[in-house]
Length: 187
Image (cartoon, rainbow, N blue to C red; front, side, top):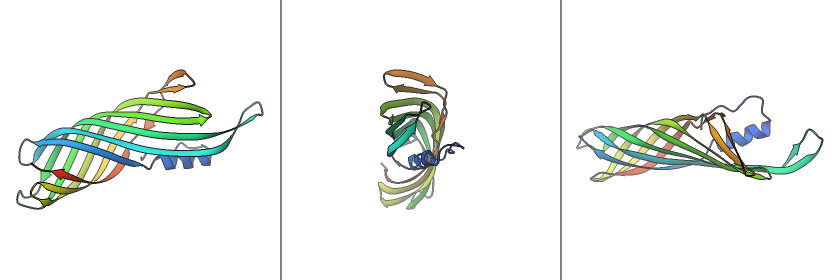
């Protein structure tokens, strides 16, 4: 994920956020070519990241100290209609693929703060741009290598902690760069 780390936060929290920025994604597209070089379809992906810090001392204004942890598990789903533009000779083995979409980002963060479990949820409009190449291995099967950019910011979050639900206008930048290796079936 590419969002900036807030300035002025404790270094251990900055390290925690840096670790949350790295994760993995899994996705699938279903596309139908409506011409030799244009396909329309649908895209789904999920980005997953997690980090945990244990035995952290939290100091309160009244002078007391609580030992607890900070744990987060991020899930960012993306669902959208998709368009693909394919360039290359129809008899060739290597094709340039440009994939673009605009759709819905669904954010979920399940975690623990000190000793309380919480869930944060939000959704936003997002878009992806994914250029790459397809290398045909057989007539109907190709290996695919892509570099993708998913862009979006969740502006409103709903947080549930200790049975209470709070809605806040905290911004969460979920923009990320993905490296993908996959396969594509051509029919």
